Image (cartoon, rainbow, N blue to C red; front, side):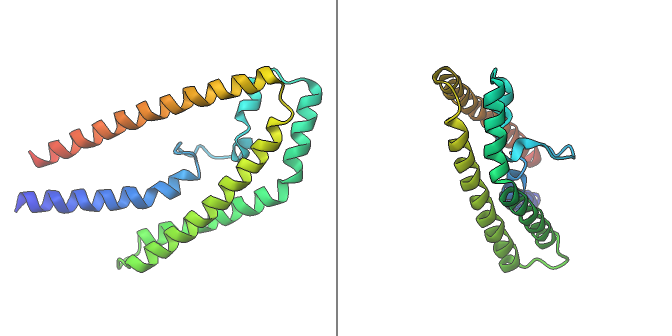
Length: 166
């Protein structure tokens, strides 16, 4: 009996985690701290480079050309995240409603990712060859860091499940 309860709890937790992934994705997996900065377009890297005044002006111009689209995508994302949360926390579980909310949120996330890639491609054109090399090195480092982070989180999750069974 106890083992059945543990299995049901584990299955429920996994379902919640799977549904929460797209919701968290809007924050890059980070906890929301309020406010809004330029992170939607992934321009934090611009702060890491020693951009010339001209490069800064060019970057601002590129981002401004997409400003209305960025705002529209962010507003849509916020609405769809709210709909997802409502579907997940509904009094009566409706799998179809959760799936629909998840699909709509995923579709919007896809649009945001494509826009981000487009903006990043445009921004890359203003970088010097040295800055492009630095960007590539940072991406490799980030990829390794993400893999390590996942492995640690997964290990903690498995340990937690093992503790539940005892």
